[in-house]
Length: 160
Image (cartoon, rainbow, N blue to C red; front, side, top):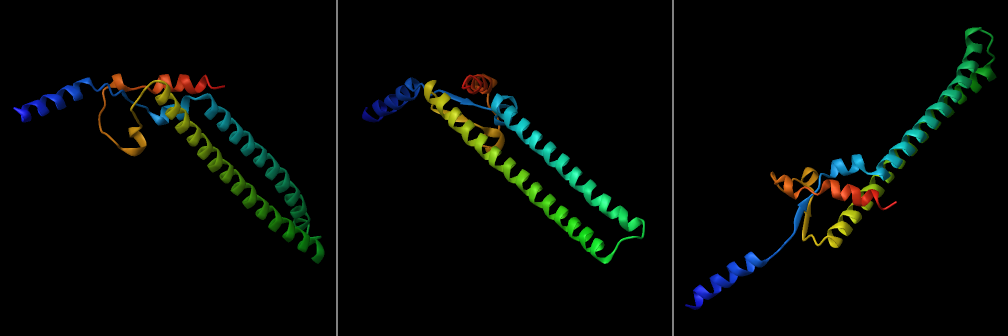
């Protein structure tokens, strides 16, 4: 009889447990939240400014190189052209690295913010578990009823 009692008790506790579970499509969140659009626009603007600046600097170097085409370059002018080309190459490397570093920083920043907001959403809405299967492969199938991606996106976008 005691064994039966414990089995019934376990079944009742499982049946009464109201764990709220959901999953989010993290890629969709990153694509649809307004903050990600702001970050993407900032990166795009920064990239455009870099390209315009490098194009202007390249024009300067190219105009110096036109002296060589006229066969009128002195040794000092050749040295200046060479140094200008090296400076341009170095500048391009630095600017491309700065763009890459900025992109990495902004991606990490938005990832951290999204994680915090999903956590906050879960706490406010009494979720025990919120999964993101796309990047972590935590499960292979989930009923679409458990998909809370859009409510999370709405929650994050309301954070303005």
